[in-house]
Amino acid sequence: MAHDGTTGLDTSDIDRWIGVPLPRLQLRYPTTEADIGRWVQSMHNPNPRFYDPDFFGESENGLVAPQSFTVAAGDGHGATPAIQGAVEGTHMLFGGDEWWFYGPRIRAGDLLQRDGMLFDYKVADTKFAGPTIFSRGDTTYANQKGEFVAKQRCTAIRYVAEEARKRATYADDQGEPTWTAEQLAAIDARQLAYYETFRAMGHEPRRWKDVAAGDTLPDRPLGPHSVATFATEHRARPATVWGAAYYTEGRTGMFDAGWLSDFARDREREAIDPAKADGLYAGASRGHADVDHARDIGMPRGYGYGSSMGGWLLDYIENWGGEGAWTVHMNASYRSPALTGDVTELAGEVVGTRHEPETRRNLVDLELRMSDQNGRTMATATAEVCLPG
Image (cartoon, rainbow, N blue to C red; front, side, top):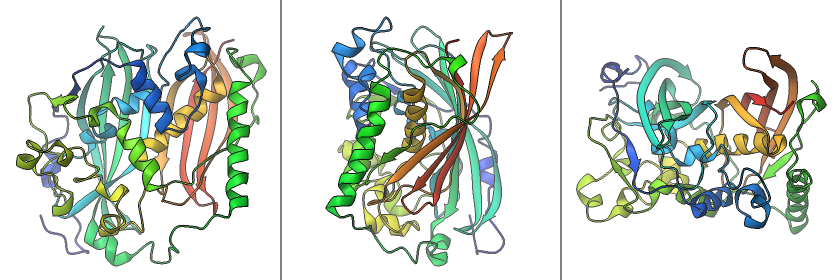
């Protein structure tokens, strides 16, 4: 596989993986109440619906996982099906997630099964790394009853790391911002104000008839992010627990995708030391929490997970909608990652409401935006949300 910076990428090995069913990383153990609580903790989402027995015990629904928990149940955060085929010297970043949710909620005792395959890809020129592969992979999630819970279409941005380093997109990065005690107190006060918006709703849902185009969702600040918060997000995924998951039989191109040597998995060593297999201490995810390895792949410092951005967006929608809300579809595009020291701002607006006679659903269309403290757009998304009528 050769790349000279001008002629493009050899993607011939990717072609043979399109539409090929992939082995799944299968969890051994059913979801527990602690798994759900650990997940909302890692997403910085203190909605009592998902962790407080006194609160969810009053609900006719009991404890259900937030829709974002589906992210935690995935293989490689849902990106694995999009990383198939060898292109030497490449790394990957999340480029986006599209979600379809079919209705069943995830509850304690559920054991999800996942099936995935590479859907398609294209090559485009980017300012960040020149010729870049945008590949999409599908994962379907079903529970132990055979009910389809969701489908995720993840976009992986696969690029030549050396080219990204040469282009030095983040060369003017000033490092982690410094926050004064007063600024941190102001961020904390805004976070508390946001938490109070969903606590004030209690068990009442947001009603479709009370929503109109032009309504805005409450602003939500997240952060400042740190290596500790990124590590917590990674560790909240049940599959990262030693011995909790295994690969079913079959072939995958993910392990031989052309990773840089410091990001490739040592399959012999990880059979002895599972810390080498979970991606945080070693492997493809180590740049998230290690500045030197982050710079090896063109990032200026520790950076967050695209899958967490998807989780933040799904939580943001669900917190706004209340207990009766259901995100039917969300399509998110990730433009820039969260970096250590930064604060992420979420904002949203209702752009339309409609009733579907054939499904009897009352739907709300949302447009969402995620930005950093300097106003730089990190992500945009659209969502269709079903509300009680």
